[in-house]
Length: 220
Image (cartoon, rainbow, N blue to C red; front, side, top):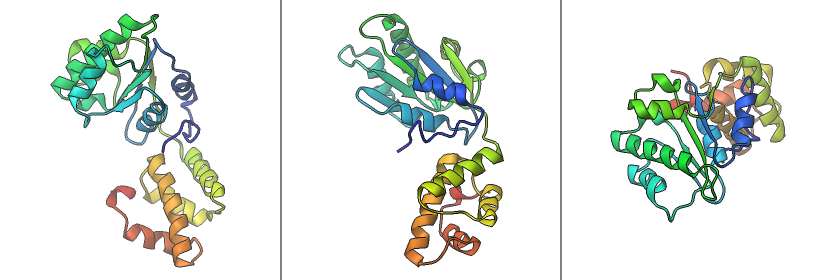
């Protein structure tokens, strides 16, 4: 389960703190490429009572209900991958923004957290929705540097009582997906694989593990 504490900020500390402190009546839009951590932040923040996470695969009816059903009183709504929303979902998100703005400062106020792969005004969306994405705070998420990723992987391994050799770490950083969520999962899987095979963590062991892993775990 993603957590805010498990997010490696790198140059994105301001965005992380904005998401952490996001209060009812306020909104944040995050944008960045694949592996920038936007989905991690949305999923982590949308945990808890009356918090909702939706993305382009979620039924538009669910988003529409959050925008129009007065019996639903969300504390926070997170909408991911807004560039991929279909017309019905775009209309529902437009209505949700209107409800968010009207409710701000009242007992029904809620927080709104949205994310996409580009800046608001360049999104392939209806014009009135593009402008609403930029109504409050907007942050661009920068990719982690190799140094940040390396330190994050060392920390994750240390938490599991592991020590990654420089050889293994370098191979991961140069051959595997840059997404930190997948890299963290890889470290966890490597630990389990090592225990199951009763073998130390070496580059051959890592390659054995990845030989049976989905292609998404590796660079194309």
